Image 1 (cartoon, helix red, strand yellow):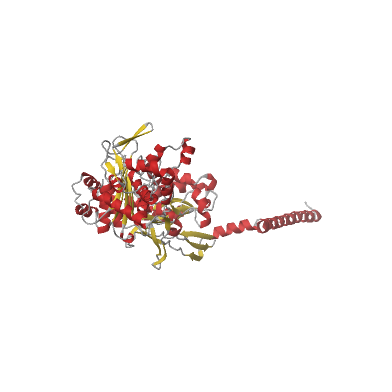
Image 2 (cartoon, rainbow, N blue to C red; image 1 turned 90 degrees about the horizontal axis):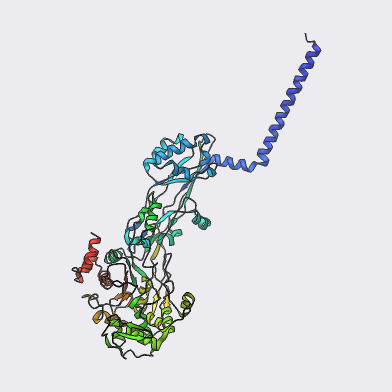
Length: 621
């Protein structure tokens, strides 16, 4: 038996032990509470906010793009969805199940989703986009299985819809998901990892105007997920853009160029507005909003015809005899060789250890003055005058005055500035001295010099527009889509001024008109409705039976600059030789001035029986 004393002692010891345990527990609890509330208070406060506050992006509608008539959009938006996931909200034991089920619904390989959710992000509360362009049916399937798809959500993400493709692709460009490198550059401008961004063309050049500002829906919920409060920051739509391009002129120029590698430019010389900017081959921008956009891009990138290249702006070519327009202005302005004085052309001349042959070979053009030399495109006339009288420095001076070797400043990315060679450039590049033979080659647009079709159009615009080149541009106005009011309009900007007399330019225009009356282009540029003027060009590229075919032209001849239109066409040497550029320029001018389609312009010029015309028609049947 236990005595009363021993019993009391035993109870007392047990009470001490219990008391110690209670106090130990209380102290541990207090220390833990201190650790949570004081030491790591900020961390747990942030976790509490993440647990109870949910933020959902509301994407802004991207601005639409119109042609100068602003009636029907060239680019619009279509409703679509994107599926996101918050990795940290997926229980580790359910990760494989959730991803497998989601892959089935989205109809993508499990490996595709796993690649977007590496182990390094699986504890992140940052929302990650798994797929865009998700159909409504897929979203419904996700909603029906949401209880078993922890961390998964969806949101509206409109897709770009390019209503006009073909030659419009190089002007408008396309959009795509923002890359990590792009996000680094644009993060401070309000871009996020879920944004789409312009990759080329107007979409890229004016991305910040088109994109608008995304909104947010913020929901506060209790521990059971029940909504307590919802706050909405509405998105603001991107601005609409009205181009200077005329849809009808663009289609006219596109069909006229046809399935020929090359480019065409249609320009209003009095303002710098571009009515058409065509490059062939082109592509369909809608392939970039498809799921396999990466593969589509690589296919275009590896295409030997380079359909992604905007040849009107991003390419440069030897100008050939269209270069004689600048040389004619130089001869007239310098007054060191009278324009009425003749030079004998016997088809070839000896210089140094080389024979320089005119394009018609023996027996040549005979005796020609300046106007006749331009009309017949006599190489020997220009070789003689510039080798003996004006020299290379004058050629460079006039080329610089016309803007060659310089950017035009067009509102498109990646403009090619061409090449204006100089003696210094040759010495640095080839470690060779500049020779008189180089001067002779350059005086007829051969040798090292390169120009883009846009620069060629600007060159002629200088002559048409009384010695002024206005900065070429594609955007006419920016419009607020909500109020349907013009926010800003592109102002006319002088790019270059030519310090020559009005008489010099008048004589040059008369000589260019002569090219279409009794010169090389008299048949191709014959037009019963409008007087035209211009210059042909045939640029050698080292092939025996093919050359780059050029034509720069304007009309109506004799009209005021504000009533005139300038056209530049280049057909590359890789095409079958058919001397198409002069005919194409005539068709484009006829259609533009008379507001006619390609077929109507062809009929007006009686060109319907030409095999070159049939080639263009068959390509669009």
